[in-house]
Amino acid sequence: MQGSEYQQSLVLPGALKLLDLKKNEKVLDVACGQGVFCRYLNDRGHKVEGLDVSSALIDAARRRSPKSISFHHADAGDPKALKGDSFDAVSCLLAMQNIEHLDPVLKNIKRWLKPSGRFVMVATHPCFRIPRQSHWEFDEIKKTQYRRVDLYSSETEIPIVTPPKNGARGHTTTYHRPLQSYFESLASAGFAVDRLEEWTSGKTSEPGKRAKAENRARQEIPLFLALRAIPVNQEQD
Image (tube, rainbow, N blue to C red; front, side):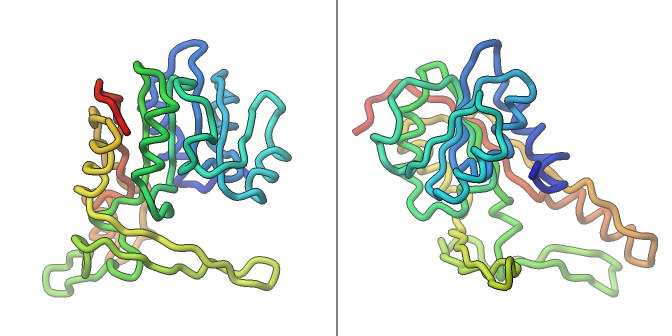
């Protein structure tokens, strides 16, 4: 499994660019899942390790990945999961919104990074992509497609039912947070954000009466938010 179309076209290359890796630098991918980004980095000659709390996902990552990639079955909120000052860069792609308690995870990421390191996070955009609380609508008078957002400022736990697999539906949870919550947690952990990017969908509609409006809306309303943060010189508890 090499990731979805959006991962291959937007998320993986965008994250790699933000990581700005130099020769022989080592990366940790937090919440690595089945190791898609780890393999992407490894295929491009980078040293990478993956960490995930799910034993099933780590097992799948190990089966599908070359032996040169090390995978750790551990909770990113556990400070003893890995040694400190071990990595030049840490990534977390499309997973922060599934982590209930951000602060301990971000503090550990800071602990695992070298002082000159950087952390790259990519998430579905919290301003515009809130499960069950945001969706597309079409204004027939203005002939405009727009994004309706019913909830934003309140931190909210949203249960998600995933598509059936092997006859059974799965369940996960999204923890919606406004943008300021991410910045506050990063600052509390000892990070300063030095880059913010908003990525739009490259998808286009089939020809039709709404195609122009739909394509314009996709280009105006971001699908993903990407942040890069660097450690700042302050002691953490």
